[in-house]
Image (cartoon, rainbow, N blue to C red; front, side, top):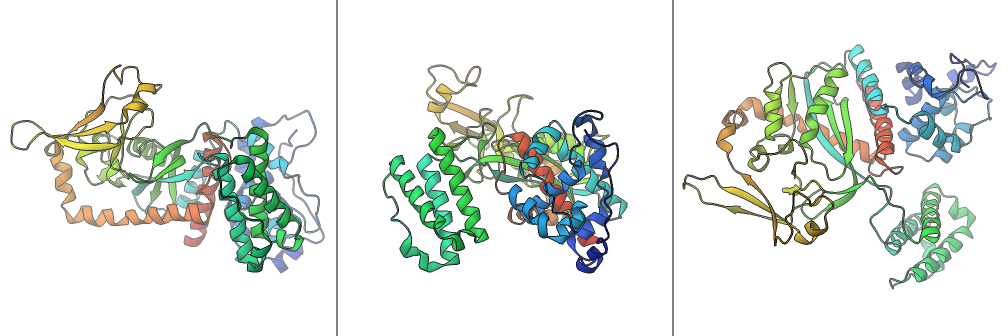
Length: 485
């Protein structure tokens, strides 16, 4: 059961907050900036109003998740810190003397039961854009678009490989804390037998666990807990957990990752105005329409879109020239993606990082070749060749692969003259000037990953990935608004 309105806690010791927490404290400034009552209103339908025991305040639970994101700590650590950290208590609306904290498992239940089926990503982005507009921070009419990669929480590794990775991370943290511990660690396993690697892992955990002083060092404790979690998972199932929604994407022709992509639109003031989350194999270009529409729905006036070559596809050029909802597209043409005739459904997406097309099943071409000669009355083609062994067993082979075929190709006609207007625009000083702002979104992607922990998924599944993205982008936008205020 949930009360119809938030309750305010009073205490004789509340004046301590003014003495202890400075006015420029980050959490105090966030509390002053954002009216979090919108969370209560948004989640009212997720609680029973007249039955059951009293639930924890959804605003407080949401703030716990925000603290977890800002400081990149676990559920257990964020709850424990709220026991003694006065800035946390102030932010959460607790009285200074209150030590009656929630159980960390409540945060997991809050995510699964209360935030489920909520479009949290668009809700939180819309709220921060609304605040930025009210503060007069967003003045530009330009959005910059790009995608950032996030690795899945699970790994496409064998049990032995993941055990070795986690053991290596633990040893590294141990050496950083006390290099003399090297001599006391067990000898590393060198073969690929799972049983031997499990034995080594248990011996390593025993040695570290027998040294309480070292095991309680925060960095060591974090890696120790991760190794224990993987060990339990493998002993129970003899396989590492798999993320069914994650897919293999490509950062370059040789460099792949297993996880998700977050497609982002950002204003010139570095406020994220829209975002979509997809599995890792999806192309960047097809997401542009939704990013522009979301940005406009959130209150952003979009007259110019700046992106890389992935956004210069034929569909996006047509979209930018729309009489009613068009915009100026500042993205360099790439003949391989600008001139290909694609179907509306099940299209082959171009991966601009690898310079290859990806089929509807997520398999990337293994090589490409140009066919035809110039000046012979016919257009040249760029032909992309796919792994025929994968095509024969592909679940989407019907209508795509012909039984008995010895090769599978996808051809793109090179007709850059059909896009002469965009090509002419590229040569202007105006295009070059506007394209220079694209570096800003690269810096934003780096902040999301390196500061707010968005390089790795916290949970499994694309819904959880969207929830994590919502919290990370909300935190990034709020911090940016505070900096510009």
